[in-house]
Length: 222
Ligand code: ADP
Ligand code: ADP
Image 1: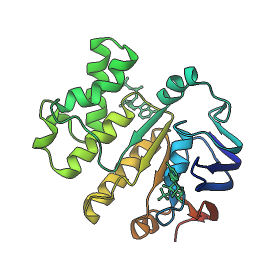
Image 2: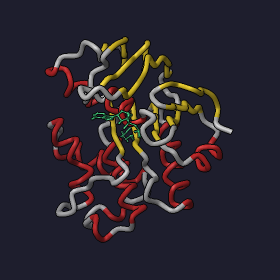
Image 3: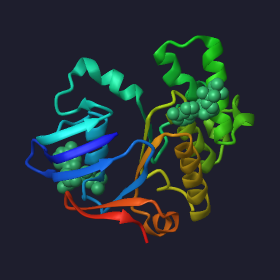
Image 4: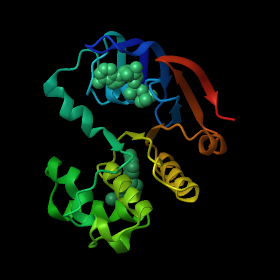
């Protein structure tokens, strides 16, 4: 699903985000990327989303070469990816339904199909009863679950999350991780950038550890 081959990323100001990073992720895997602030986690995610280009090396995602991808191909790439942000980035003047429906409206699906898929995604995060509420009426944990529903409503092959539990207490953080595991069981590849080592250690998934742009660990968290 993902192949980094000696991928390097140097920013225009000379800062190095990643140094010749190599690893592979199989379809259906669940893995964490961890490391201190500045280790290169966000750079890695931005490369996968084609928000940044590698400076050197080769980066393959679902048989597409992201080192060579054209601007015109980027929207098609993004359709295969769902993204969950730390601060969920919901639209506060729109209902839960409208927030989750947004990616499907962009795809131009019919109203009936959108309605069915939005309800199914909200059921998956146990928020079917909140469909007509505004995000402001929900708790922080519920808002993050709406963000997850929005990220998977178009059934992406790959789900990326950037510090998805950063603002949550440990109980809610564990609940959110459980939802990611449920989504993974449906076949979606899940890659989560997080520095919550205590939580990661309890989950026993593959963990890539970055330090100053280099891979210094790859194995089951313990
Ligand atoms: P993390 O997400 O692990 O905190 P980042 O990928 O944000 O790490 O940063 C890795 C390195 O790349 C850091 O040295 C950072 O200063 C640099 N960096 C990240 N984004 C940019 C940018 N847009 N421009 C210049 N340097 C950047
Ligand atoms: P539906 O109930 O809409 O017919 P399916 O039977 O295709 O959906 O899938 C069952 C459930 O799994 C639905 O909730 C669907 O949204 C979800 N699902 C299917 N494929 C994926 C995927 N790749 N990633 C996330 N969720 C998925």
